[in-house]
Length: 425
Length: 150
Image (cartoon, rainbow over all chains, first blue to last red; front, side, top):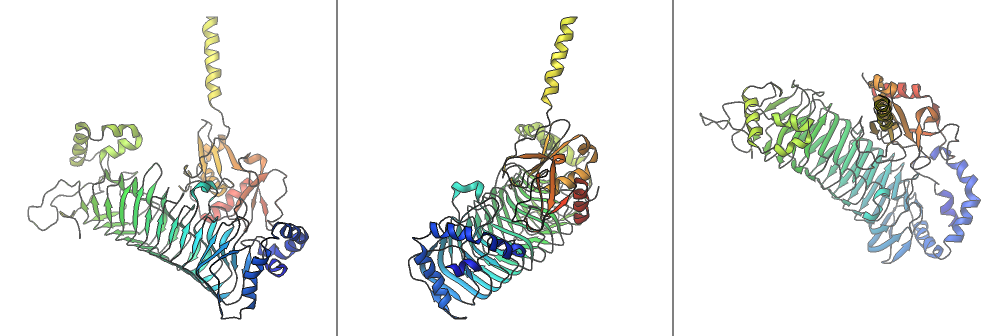
């Protein structure tokens, strides 16, 4: 037990440089506290540590189908730990669970529950740090502060895990999957709920995030910053308090995702802030207050998406240029597009707009008159939200129609010159 | 005459009392950062600028407040700037009475690793690499790192 204690960082995530000094300094104190508090568990704790100590590099350690006590257990050997779908590791609400610092380590088929939580420390059920070739799969992570925390690692695969946090601990909840300063991370088919951010990436490069089901988290479903060259494909983000936010990143691919049910002030299906040279296509935006909110984003291709029943389908600020909005379906939205300027630095073409009132005399499927997706009333609503009461009034409709014919207040050149007559398949 | 004077004086006092530049409460997970639009959810790093009209602009981090102050110098001049005490939950520090530090090991929401402590307070022992900065240095650092334009 002392052995595992020696090698366990006091605060493993960030304080590496300071570690040896600090550990030595606090050792007597901590050891005393440890021995007094965990006498009853020590036999089983050492059991888990012993199992790993006995294994050779390359071995698979099978756990029995029972509950093991777990407290900051360091794994440095190249082993596979398999819980045979029955083992439960209980952290007992104090500190970290497993700390992985090595290469070629696989964790699979068990449950870890009840990590500690704190304001200064990011306690996690699994902390992966300075590691390479790590696989975390088929785990159930219940009521942890952070579930999986990856820092300064390479080639980490996190798949098919169920990550659930207790809603009672809302204000003290950490992120489900938190990845920081890492490269080539794959996150597939996880279910994440009840955490702060479902998936969070900061300074991550070349990652692939697919098929995850992220719902009812207390902040963002997906949140990334400064994470270039990452792809997000086939994920569902539903009913997260603030939707999805992606910021300060280049070369992002977002395809076939579903952004659903993000209602309320300051909530967006997808918030794009300073995103450049990226692709957003084949996604579904349904029943959000704002489907996509884009600010200071340049050269983003928003194509082939479905915008259904949103308050505002697309809110796009004029401080970004050369975005292309093409061949999307805008169906049943209150406002199709809104913006903050009379100029339009972006390109709209070939979208289907359910509010289009034009005609197609030559029957080529393309409307003969252009469509202006910005309604005059959206300007009123912005300045005076209460005016929304008048949304369905004849007067509002009249004003909108007049504005469409002679645009005075809405952006003059924000038009779709070739609106589709039928929804695009 | 006297009465009306008294009345207007009273009205004036009451009205001017309405403008207070005390820090307002920030609703975590609900309020949006006035600079980067992220939801404010880390009390430790939260900041706010209270304008001379008494309106509070919340920020999720000190770096966002610095960038905002740089972009709106007129507003920042008469405003009161507050940052959360890193070590004590719910304690607001006037930026003039605070020490701002940068430490790579501190994960601030916007990644520039800034935090604030009450003036002269010691840095918590687990933060080894803290580097003290004046408010002007902080602004210059953020402007430089993020390439903030006016």
